[in-house]
Structure formats: structure tokens, C-alpha cells
Amino acid sequence: MPQKGIITLPRSVSIISAASVGGVEESKGPLGGSFDVVDAGGDDKFGAETWEAAEGEMQRRALATAIGQALLTEHDIDAVFAGDLQNQCVGSNYGLLDFDIPYFGLYGACSTCAEALILASAYASGMSSGPTAAVSSSHNCAAERQFRYPVEYGGQRAPTSQWTVTGAGAFILSTETEPTGFPKIVDFLPGRSVDRGINDLNNMGAAMAPAAIDTLKRYLDASGRTPDSFDMILTGDLGVEGSRILRDFMPSAASVHEDCGLLIYDTAATDKHAGGSGCGCSASVLASVILPRMGLTKKNVPPPDGGRLCDILFLATGALMSPASVWQGNNIPGICHLVHIVAGGGEADE
Image (cartoon, rainbow, N blue to C red):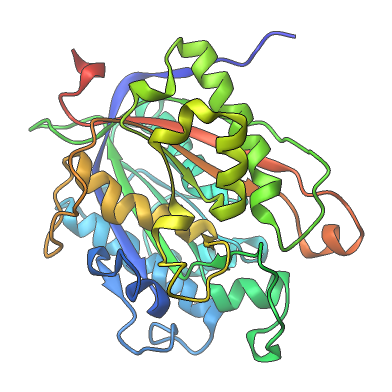
């Protein structure tokens, strides 16, 4: 069977702006000082009446901030691709309702950030004359009571369980980049569903890791490159369990592998078990600390530590299940979409 190959964009697409939103727990973590917006109320409500409405408000603030940092208005954006973890993506639907922008709702579970970047960049490169936007989010309390138990229940969490991040990320993409220097999406590889028989709702890492391995291996085989030729291979979000599986099966990637679910919390000091997860995990990490290390300057946010990144693979992973599918005993397929990003003036431009 022929392999589905890497897709190269017909026109180069730059990430000209990115904004991140973090909740209470996230603002206490290692990346807390890098978020553009944090919850000032201290209750993860962001001024809304419910957690579900709060997630919509997070998306609204993320997109508004990203548009503002790009010195644009909503009328300059040709389309927005957005998703979240709530049923029917109501976080995105309601949160972005007041923007006068054509809207595409997405659901890729925790892989939604990469899915949105792929579709927004393809739209900008081949179908649009103006900028596009990609947005994704998750909210711990909204997700927990949809997929597991309401937080008031106080149920004990398994050691392999991950903590759904209360966070959001928004990205503005454009083919018109004067002056140059913005991070660029060079190419991408859409993921395919992978089922390895995992049916444990409290072990998302094990369900998603096989998909990450599948996508990464296909990309390396097709490109002829090795893991150590990249500055970073960033997964989002395998957590402790999934990262261990990836490194066991692909030891050559271990030295450059990082995971958003492990970066966003200090798991040794806080009760986050296997790390972070959710659509907002990889989105907020990519927007807050990774892209600034690739040259994307941000207002009122200091440059992150860690040194410059010039060439990375961003692989967002998702567990493709619903509450009903798990209750009915079905396995949990995984998905992993890959986006190749280089710093402005990097090797892909030479």
C-alpha cells in the first residue's frame, strides 16, 4: 500500500502572531510567566458563570490578543479554524461567536492544535489572500465532568492519568510577511488513526503514543532525516507514560524529544500524576514558549529561557473517543498530526 506523503505548502506560511491563555494551576507552573493572559479571578471562570462558558471566553481572549499583537483587526482574518474538548465544540462555537470571521469547527481531541495549524496554513497558502487563524483550548473542570466525573465528586485519579490543562492558544498565519523573520510552517504530515487495543480512560498516553510513533516514523522515512537533525521533536501531549513508550520504541529521538504535557507542570512538586493533556496543553505551550524561542516576539511577555530553536517538529496527539464509546467498552484509537516549523531565515529558506 503506498504511503501518504509529506505535504509541502505551495506558498510559504509564517506564524506572525501567537497568544496563550493559562488557568490558575498553569500560571503556577514553570511556564506561568510566559502566558499572555491568566485568570485574574483565581477560580478558572475568567469572569464567566460556568466552566464551559469560561472556555469560550478563553478562546475569545486568545484570538483577540493574537489579532491585536499582529496589528490586525478581525476583518483582516479570512478564516478561523478552532476546536476544543466539549461536545459539539461549543467552547469554540460560543467563544468565537462575535468575531466577524468565517469559522471552521474542528475536533481532533488533544491533537486539535496541530490539526488547526495544518488546515489554516493550507487554506492560507492555497485558497486565501489574507491571514487565517488557528485556535484550540481545554478546561480542566469542563472536560473532567464530561469525560470522567465532576470535580466535586473527588474521585481518586490513577497514577497514569493526566491533568486536563485549563489553557488556550491562538495563532495568526500569513503568506504576506514583510519584514521577514517569523517562524514558518514548511510542511506537514497528517496523522492516521492507530488502534493498539488500549481501552483505559485513565491512560491516554498509552493510547496516543503508538500514533505519535507511526507519524514520526513515516515523516523521518519520507524526509530522509534523522531525529538529531532537528532542534526539538515536541509532542503534545503524551505525558509520562506516552513519552516513555515513544522513547522506548524510538530511542534515537530521546535526546531531542520534549512533551508539552511534561513542560507545563512541575509534576514532581504538584499532584498532576502523568502530566498535562487537553487541546489547550500543546496550544498554550507552543504559543507561550516554543515560538518565541523561534524568533516570534511578544508584547509584555519576556523571552523564554532555553536558547534559540531553528528547526522543530511539532506533533500533537489525540485520543479519539467519547464518553459513550468508552462506557461501551470500545478501544481508544490515537491520532497524531505533525507540523514542521522553522525559524525565519532557517535552513528551509536557504
